[in-house]
Length: 386
Image (tube, rainbow, N blue to C red; front, side, top):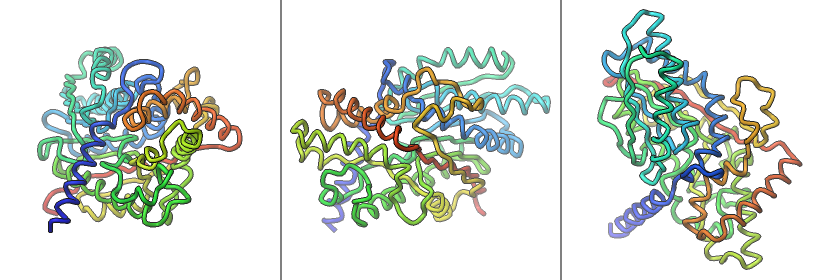
């Protein structure tokens, strides 16, 4: 009994430590997430039809009689991501209610992320967001109230039976903590790799299973019957093996950089051995299995797609936003990973780490087509009592 208590206490400490240091890079400089989140932005563009379909079905089948409550979980600090999603959802609803000559609506928007997130930068964009609503939708669209909700989405963050629509993109692959008891089997390895033993792969999956089931349970408590949820996260095609290069290679390159710096004496080996990335990339079947296991949602759609590291693969696609003048995969990855590097290794090595990372990414992109596999899943809250 005492052993289990100590294990639980250790788990709480590990999760608390990650919550304290994990966030996208704040501010507005060129390597901040607000400026450099090119890959997440493309992911949002590619999943727009899924979100539009879900919000249309939600509103058409069960028009909310009062305010429409929409949440974006893992909103980060970039208006290019979270607020664009919210704008598109409001515009879709407004088009429907105008078509049926319905009264303007009230929208309650909830932007959620961990407490360390740079909410100041995000909320500094609210005026631009509100101006765009008035300019492109019209001053008779209704009213929009935007709220910040700091906290982990692996716990309760909203009142019971209140949310109509929940969205999350590029967030749920992040675990609540690094899996326990993997350090001894992960010497000089920061993530699941081809060299990882089965025990490490199993530990990562079990942590994801625990987190994702808790996420679903909490959202089931918070969502109204018939409410919709669209989730997009890094994933993999392969249903049989937890490691997949298409979603793990970006971390392998970082691992190679850090190992080189250990060999050169720039980083202490023990420090590297204690560093692990808390990410799991599920397969479509794993997601569907866990949704069914939790039991509160029906699966409407599962869509697997890829995003290239190289902007040249998109520059002739008119459906995607044109960020070709600034698209930079390495800078984007820095905006995501820099806070973790600083928290573990210190500020002084950051520039060197990402200069080396850039070179390794450049060489790799010249030799092969590197992609990130994503899985989007659209869910409906099953009516209570059924």
